Image 1 (tube, chains in turn green, purple):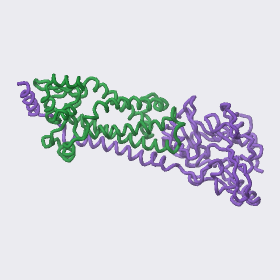
Image 2 (cartoon, chains in turn cyan, yellow):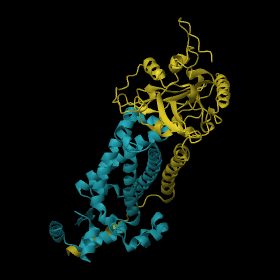
Image 3 (cartoon, chains in turn brown, yellow):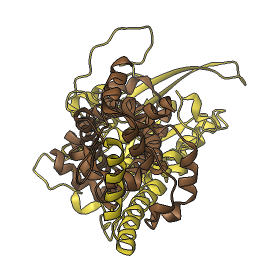
Length: 235
Length: 313
C-alpha cells in the first residue's frame, strides 16, 4: 500500500482542509516547466505550420519572415525537448499504466458524457492523461530525431538526401499527430472545469479531486502531511 | 555544326519574359499565361565534350561567383562538387566498356536540368522562391528564399546548394538574365567544341537527332537523347553515347522522377494533415456544444470536505 501511495500522490501534493477543500497538485517548478513546454510547443506549431502548407505561410510573419522561421524553429525545438524532458522526469512514474486505467478507457462513453460517477476511482492521472503523456513523449522523440536530420544549417552533411526525404515526411506526420494530441489536451482542460487552475495556481478544489481523481485524493488524505515530508526527504 | 546564338545588339532592350510568363510559382497559385512561350533548351553533347571547363569558367564569370580554391586530390573534378558558388560541374568518369574493352573517359557537365515538372518547386514552402517560366526555365528568386533546403529534397538530380553566407539556395539559372535579352547561356557561348548548344527545345531535339545518327554510324549503337519523361522532360538535355545506361555518367539517374516520399509529403500529408487537425478541433467544439462543460458539483465539494474532515477529527 505505501509504495502505491507514494507513486500515485506526486511530489508536493497536499490537502488543505477548509471550505472548500483545496489540494496542491503542481509545484511552482512543475508549473513553470509545463508553461515553458506549452509556450515552445505553440511557437513550434505556428512556425512549423507556416512551412507545412502554402496557405499557412503567412504565419511566418509572426516570427519576422521565412528566413527567421527557418532559423528559429529548430532552436525552439531544442528548448521544447529539454523542457519536456523535465516534465517527463517529473511525471513518468505517475503515468505508468494501472489496472483501473483499462476500465476507465473501456467506459469512454461515460467519460465523454461526464458520467464520472460510473468510472473507477483514479489516481493522479486518468488513462486519457496518460495517453497524452506517452504519445507526446514518443512523438517528441520522433520529432527531435527527424528534426535534426533536416536541420540543414548544422547537420546537412551527416545524412543522405533520401534519409532527409524520409525525415521531413516523418517530421510532418509526427507534428500533425502532436498537434492533435495537443488539441485533445487543451480541450480536456477547457472542458473539465477547475482543471486549468491546477496548472496555473497549482491547486484544485477538493471537489475536483473527489470527482476526477478520487484515489489520488484518498491517498493524500490518508497520508499525514508531516509523514509525507519525512518520506520525501528520505527518498 | 549548329549555328551559334548571334551576338545581340548592344542597345537597351526590354526582357523577353518576366512575371507575366510564370507557369508555376512555388507555394502559390498562378494563372499560367494563355500562350506559352517557345520552349528553350540547352543540349549538352557528351560525346563532343573535351573537359576543358570553359563552361565552368564562363559560368563563374557571368554569375560573378567566387568558388573556394580547393586542394588537388588527384581527380579532375574541380571543385569537388556543385557548390553555392559553382552552378555547373564537369564530372569525369573512367569507364571500361565491357563490349570493346576500351577505356572510355566520360565527361558530363552536371547542373540543373530545368525539369518540366520541377521537384524543387513542388517541395518549396516559400511563395515565389522558385518560379518556372513558360519557356521552361526554372529559376530561384533569392529574395523570397528562406534557406530551408526543401528544394534539395525535392530535386531528383541533387542540384540545389544552400549558401552558408546568405542562407539561400543556388543553382544554374540557365542564364535566364541573358536569355531574356536574346543571348545564349554563358556556358554555351564559351564552349569551344559546341558540345553545349542552345536554342528552342524543338531545334535542340532535331539537332540531337543528327548527332545521334552520326554517333550510331560510328558504332555507338545505343546513342540517344536524355530527356527523361519521368520529370516531364527537361530543358537541359544530353546526347549520350550510351543512352541505355545513363548511370555510368557519374550517376546520371536512369528515369528520374520526383521521389514518391516527396510526393506523399507534399500531397497526401499536406491535405490529410490539415483535415485531421481541423476535425480534431471541430470535434472538441461540437462535443462542448452538445455536452456542455464537465463541472464539479456541490456534492463533490461536500464529499471532499467530509473526507478531509474525517481525517482532521
